[in-house]
Length: 141
Image (cartoon, rainbow, N blue to C red; front, side, top):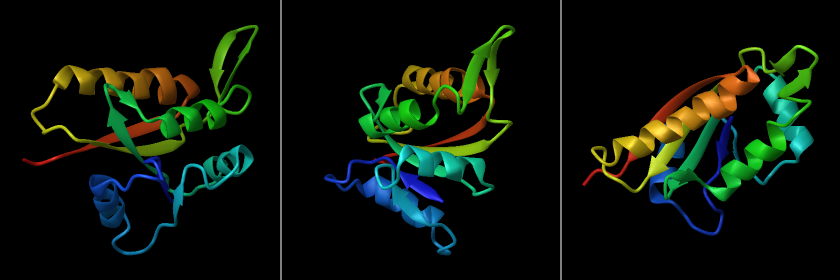
């Protein structure tokens, strides 16, 4: 399954290209992050479905759609909890493939990439006991 986090109102050429390449053999369903409810997304995450998240990067941050989805779906009680022994990640090694698009050149700001990758790895996916593979797509000039 491919989940698109680019705004519906704005067609991202790079986002469309990435999704087309990921789905060149038509084996994935493609949804926008707003197409399903929190419960539907959580049911999909519980499944064995291969997940590809395609998200834009703006101003050293993730899109509103991506941040909102993470906050709503990768939520307390579903993805992690706290008990008398501390925090527990509940994702049991669930694999996520995160494909990030950015209008920068590949030799662009390495500090931005490092910061965003750290947030994804440590601050989101590893925090809840999931695994993440991060793939960058940048404008070639």
